[in-house]
Length: 320
Image (cartoon, rainbow, N blue to C red):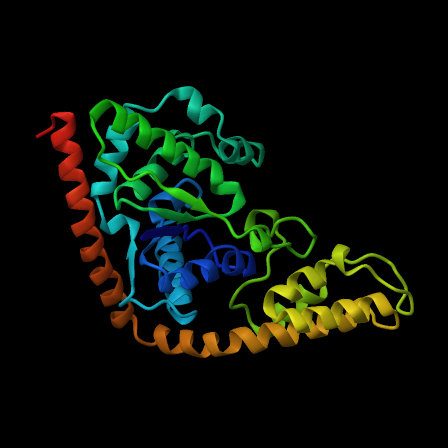
């Protein structure tokens, strides 16, 4: 089984990225051949500063390697190091109905948030389809908000195969429902664009301030509280074992246990999980040539797979 996932370098990664995408992708290393790319072409729809894009791309690489990505088992690369993706994007675009793209929720959502209505933003799902189909991916781990883009990919693959022959593998989305939406400090989905994120590798001071600012209701300390409506508990249970989560839930229901207590336990859980990753990240940041070597080696392996697919596509379509 071939698994593909990608993440945009459009700012510091946060807990929503880790629990919603990173950890599931890292766990899939055990289940099949994994391709994981840093989607810096996609990031250009929102990031226009060259230095910032370079920095963010490097930081994503450091974050994934620090959190346990194994470059021997995972083909880890920058999207921009595989130019074949653009030729396939153009070929797929000749099959893509305008109406299919106009119905994509992500495009409408970004317009509503004030992002410029560029062609790149509108055609984003076609580039994403090329990312997936180029490597003959069987499984694509995505957040719930990206599921529609995988469905677009499936539509385009089926349309291409019907017209030109069975070239593309039809991918399946993989969504872990229990962590598909990670709440931010205001209870909405955690997102940089919403200003409600807790950084994955923020400083101790920043992390404490963010967690202590998580919105809670006004239930008095001594009264029982509903853990299922508590944003602190929703985050805490992502960090800990089911038994530890059940223990906090019981304390909330019993009363005499305040949201401040729960936030302190969340801070401790954050450090217990992420401090070892933080140490590894510092080591990697001090070895930039090693990180670059990993990305270039991954790109070479990715291009070998991409070239095989593109050759079949070119022959099927008459370009060769």
